[in-house]
Image 1 (cartoon, rainbow, N blue to C red):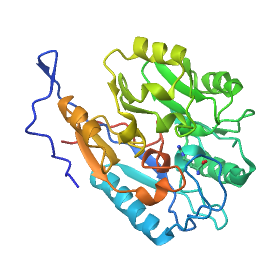
Image 2: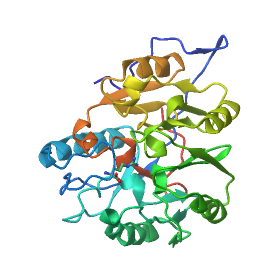
Image 3: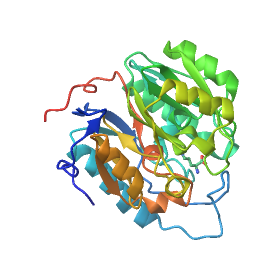
Length: 297
Ligand code: ARG
């Protein structure tokens, strides 16, 4: 993989002005994929007849969390449970903004046992408490924070009534976005927040009004080609400077480098059998102690 320094030699120019990207130290919640499996199919990617390798998933996940720690971020953990094969996807455990956590309600019964486990863990990590939501809401899978407010997915998992509920609890404006392609069923498979004012996305994953809204909000956005989006390239994690993305997303990595980011590729291909990737495995804890400091370098 490329190291954090990759891309240093490429001058980052936006409208002729060099951009100096600054990393912000983050705090993440993750869950080791000890019991990872595909036993049911609740999205386009999952095929219970195809064997998965939990040991390989664990090795890839270990590398991901070691990478975050190496970049100076804090990784909090939640204990995995047997018979909850999707629990590794911590992004679906809640949304945390300003130290306030909103828990989740899953669309499908298969994951409902995770709701209380994540809520209890978030209650311990979020200084302003954790709220149990009324409406179906799959956490950071469908709610992504930017300066303009919370980008909120719907169409496959999170129901639109949850948008107003999350907006009220987290006190941020909400921007509903309708997903239309079952391969990109969570917002975080179709759109990646690179910094507060910049996103990357796959336009074809959204309906026309949502695309128009994204163009208005983010006129400088990076668009990613579909073949790379199908590697779950947009299921990436940015700290404002380093962008952790899946191996093989070459054009996305080049676009990031051209904008002054340091792309770091890592292979989490085993998780893709369940329809998940890097961002799905990572829940950001905002406003928790220790998070949000500018990075040392
Ligand atoms: N198998 C999981 C599900 O369908 C994958 C979740 C992926 N998570 C995400 N944030 N996109 O619920």
